[in-house]
Amino acid sequence: QGNTGDARAFDGISFDGVDDNVEVASTASLNISDYLTIETWVNIDASATGDNFFTLFKMASNEGLNLSVQDLGEDGNYRFRMEADTDAGRLRVDSESVMAAGSWHHLVGVIDSVTNTASVYVDGVKSGRFDIDFDNIEFTNSAIQLGDKLPGSMDETRMYHRALGDAEVVEHYNNIFINNRELALYLPMDEHQYDITRDLSGNANNGVLANGADWATSSTEESEFLFHVDN
Image (cartoon, rainbow, N blue to C red; front, side, top):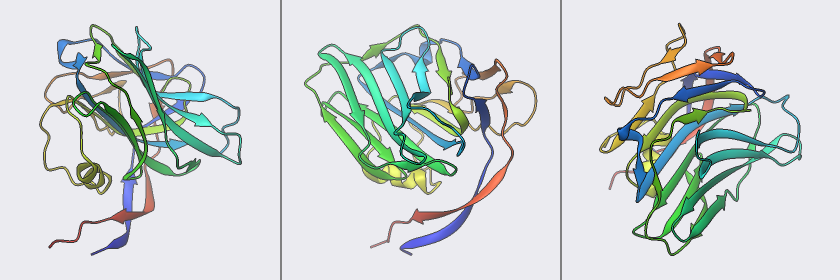
């Protein structure tokens, strides 16, 4: 127990950084209010250049909700950002830690209207928090786009209608999933055939690979996973 080096296999979908994306059609099960968690694994191409924001997740018809990574122009380092419109104004939270291109990173964005906070996590660790006195967030009747202008790959994308806590984020980073309550979307992104990635949440929110998005080459990567120590 404690920190353990482990090998994790990644599949995912590859994007060219120009116009590739995965599109998820609007359904009632994707309507958002009050609580939200979005998580995914991302690997940015080491050859990517430019001082740009690369979109991971956005409401396609309403950019009031957007998760992205920013190229810091510092030898392939990137920062994770979440933005959303609320009834009290725009919230934005950036990760304090940076990510290196060329390796897989677990990114999580959480919005909680009870605690009036928005938080981002990088590789299981809370890396940024924004406090705002809002009553609700609401995004309805909007499709979702994944990977727009992202030069890299995404894998294992989930969306919950609840706010994950710190301990649960660590569990998910370690590939431990105990509570799937309020799971609205789960795209394993591992089919490696056709142009559909199936939603396994039970809500049939399948994703369509568009504009040339393709299946990534399967890879195995050594990761320093963090494990809970039982009392």
